[in-house]
Length: 101
Image 1 (cartoon, rainbow, N blue to C red):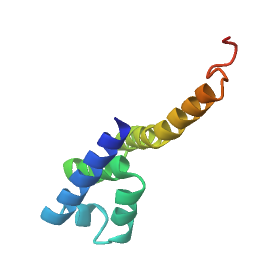
Image 2 (tube, rainbow, N blue to C red):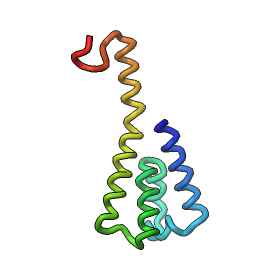
Image 3 (cartoon, helix red, strand yellow):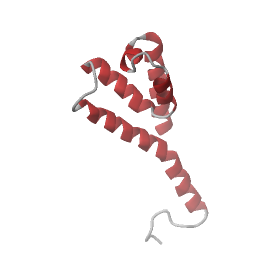
């Protein structure tokens, strides 16, 4: 499920970048940060662009939305590793949670 959210946010950010001037406005015409955003933190970058477009800038409490999007990006990126670790522990016969028998 996390890959679907990451894919959707990448496609949405790419569409916003191609068909509207919002990404260029939010990043002041630069292309490197939005490109890195598509690759590494797509939900955070998309949220930054949306907040910038709605509020005219990112100040004050608007940073809360960016922080929440960053946490969502971290959770989406860490979920596959956590699932792989649980599967590996289950195959090895080790319990996935400490204290369980």
